[in-house]
Length: 68
Image (cartoon, rainbow, N blue to C red; front, side, top):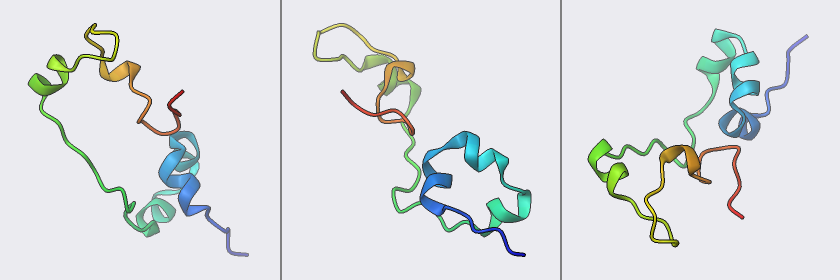
């Protein structure tokens, strides 16, 4: 029996992705969103709408977080 993998869920849900075997993770296509890299110096300079600096931990763009 072949296990059906939910590709979109695997892209968005780290816990689900980590539950897959190494072989299953290797078979996943690359996310169309791709990887984004930002220099630490840029992240440290980001200011939210309140005018206060924010941290990447506060980000709502990391799956599975949703922006309010």
